Every structure is written in C-alpha cells, then in structure tokens.
Amino acid sequence: MNFMEDKMLHTARQILIRIALALMIVTLILGCSCTKPKLGTLIGTIQLVNDSGDPANDPADFSGVSIALYAPAVLDTAIVRANIKYPGVGFAISQETEFDHREHTALYTASSAADGSFNLAEIEPGRYNIVLSKAGWGWRYLLDCMVGVGENTLSEFVSGKNNQATILYPERTISYNDQIQSLKADHFYKVESDVVLIHNLSIERGAYLLLTPLTNLTLIGNLTTQDNESGSYAKVLVEGSSVELDSAFGKVMVQGNVEISGVVFSNSLTGVQFTGGSVVAADIRVKNGSSGLMCRNCVAVDISNAVVSGIGQLITSGANIYSTDGGLDLTSCDNSQVRQSVLSRCNSGVKVREFCDTNVHDCYFFYNTIGAEGLVNTAIYEHNEYLGNYSYDIRVYGTCSPIIRKNNFQSTRGVNIGLNTLLAFLNCNPLITRNNFNCEVFAIRIMGNNMIDVDATNNYFYSTNFGRLEELIWDQNDYNPHDWSNQIIQNTAYINYIPFLNNKVPDAGIRM
Image 1 (cartoon, rainbow, N blue to C red):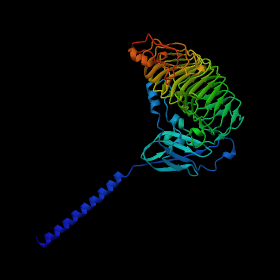
Image 2: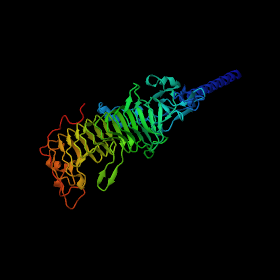
Image 3: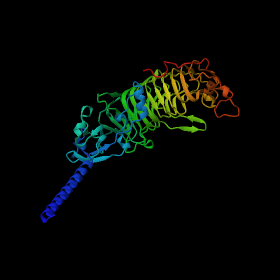
Image 4: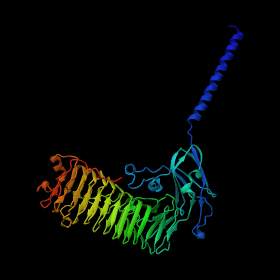
C-alpha cells in the first residue's frame, strides 16, 4: 500500500467514525425526546362576584383563588352493581353525590393572579375533579374532566350545567331567626351556632348548607327543594376541613311539611329529623353519620329512590346485638312507605318503630348489620332483596303482627323474631310466607319470651330435606336448659313451616 492509498484509507475511517458519532448523537436526542413524558397544562380565569348587596364583600381583586386537581372519588362498587342490577332502585351514584375534596389530597395546585388568571403546568394526562375555592367564597367543582397533553383551558370544561362554574360567590352566615327564604344554587350558607327559622324554606339544587360541628338547625315551617334543571344535588354537610364523624354537625329538624328531591345529607351526628307534617322525599343520598333520616309523628311518609350507607355504629352486649337509629327511621307515622331504595353498610338499614303502618317494598338491603328492623308496629316487608346482612336480614319484636312476604333472603341469617328474654318484647306474631330463604345459619328464628306460634308456611328453603329444614328453623324444638347461647327458653313458641314449597317463589324479590 503506497502513501496515497494509506492516506485515503485513513480519511475514510475518520469520516466513518464521524458519521457513527453523529448517528449516536441523533439516537440519543431522539431517545430523550421519546422518553420525555408528555404532560398537560391547565389555564383559565376565575371571577369573584359579589351578589350579596353588601359592599364589604366586594373583592379588591381576583387573586388567591385555589385551583386544585384531585383524583376522582372511588365509587362504592357494591352500590354501583346494585344500580346496574336494579336500575329502578335508588339512583346512579356519581362524582356529584360522592366526591368531597376535603376527604382527599390535591395532586396539583395553583393560585389565581389579581386578574383571576392561573397557569397550572406539568399535569399528568388523565381524568380529574377540578376544585376552585377561596376562604369566605366556598368552592366550585368541575367533575370528571379529561386533562390532555398540551394546553387545556378551563372553558373546555365549562358548559351546560357548569356554564357559571368559574364564578365564586360570597358565603352567607345564617343567624337565629334569619328571614332567609331560599338557598340559591352555587351559593354557600353556613350555620355557625344553633339556629331556629320560623318560616318556609326552599333549597335550590346545587346549593350548599354547611353546619359547624355539633350545631343544630331547626326549621319551623315547610321545607322544599327547587329543581333548576342543573342536574346538581343540594348538599347538607358539616363545615370545616375535617369530615370525620366525631366533628359532625348535630341535627337538622323540620317541623312542617317536607317535599324534597336531589339532596345529599352527610356527616350528621344526630340525624335529619322530620316531625309532624307529611314527607315526600325522593332521589336522596344519606351517608356517613351516626343517625340517618328520621320521621317522627308524621301524617304521611313516602320515601323513594334513596341511597343510604354508612349510618350508625354497632353496639354489642353479650350474645345480643342492639341498634341505634336506622338509616331510614320511622316512629308513629301513618300512611308511610319506603320503596325502591338501597340500604347498605348501616347498623340498621330501615327501622320501623312504634305505631307505624309502614310498607317497606322493592328495596335492596346488603351488608348491613341488620337489614330491616321493626318494633311494635304493623309493617309489611315485601318484594325486597336481602344480601349478606351480618346479624339478621329482618328482626321484628314487641307486641305486633308484621307481614313478611315475597322477599329473597341470601345471607347467613334470615328473619329473627323476638329479643332475648325481656318481658317487654314478647308476643310478636308475624306472618312469614312465600319467601325464598337461601341462608346458612338459620332462615327463621324465634327466641326469648315470644310465646305465640309463628305462621311461616309456604316458604322455599332451597332444600326439601327435613333434617336440613330443622337446622334452618330455630324454635322451641331447639330448647336446651343447659345452653342459653341461642336465647331459646322454655317459654319460646314454635314456628310452623309446614307446608313448605318445593320450588322457588317466582315473583319474590324486587319487581322490575
């Protein structure tokens, strides 16, 4: 190889090396750009509008509004499944009824400038609940918003029912004997000490009523809701950053007629109580309280399409289980019914107390301590579904004659009659017929000083074996003087379950 050839070869090698280095650099650049996460930005403008008529509420500017993004609330899958299985029972829970930003941690936050503008950058694309809030001005939700790669504007999520969702209004504090007649949508009303209102009150759907912990609101007048076609729910909540039960509000009491729909009641220590008038309540959500919705001495009650969960606490004493207030709780109410409702994870789903002729029908009871409970009344429990209730599906006791028919029971225990050995709770005489009992421990049990034989004929027990049927029926035949664990004593009566059915009752359970 001569000098010129050697030089040419060396030059070619250098060129190839340079090309290889260039390719490596291009590959690194492309690799970095490919692995760099694709993020989004949210921009927009918030307004503070003083419609209170009080110049003291005029904002100096629009700064200080918090813009926060939260992961959507995880909906209770059991309630979602119930709504899918029985679409006419309860209603479809959603972010609107379940999300409360105070129960979650913000994933991204920003604050508005003096002109109300904001820029929230580096957001992982996905679905978020957007919360706009400012002290003294309440909060606004834009729910289930899809934030994509690149620039997103708040106006993209503001349409239809949310066409005013970038506006915050001043909060108003309701004082004792306030003359306020209506709670407006998208406004916040606070009760900071016990309040009595002596007039009628209307609540627009989309309004917020917040009560300071342990505070009571009494309305001596009629309560109604006003549907503004927004699709929103009015909210009655505890005020403050914490929504734990130990900081819940006390009681909301209405002494008048009630006609409401589309309301969420949550975190009440002593419940929502309607007294004295007639009650029509539909499409309501009651959750997370020591007590639920109570009707006392009402002339008529119609509760329909309610979704109730997380009400009450388990109280145990030896082998006996006692309940406090029910999720829906009625006492001395004529012409009353609870229908097409979902009761879940309550101490007692529906509790019908003394002197009620209540009809509980087409309801779904699941995962409660006690599904439905009746004391000294003439209630009818029919066409209901009971699934996985921990203690009993139905418990009835006291001097009364309830009717239990055409229900489906699928749980550990079915119907319990009587309450331990207390003389005050004897002689319950139910009629139990045409039900399907798919129970593990017992289907029907009579206990204590209940000395009247029970008519439980024409039921289906998923078995025709007499040995198995005797295992599912607990009565005087199971008395053991040396063993009181089942609370069957010498005075306990018998359950007459013959004749029984050889096939399922076809029209039992919820009617679709």
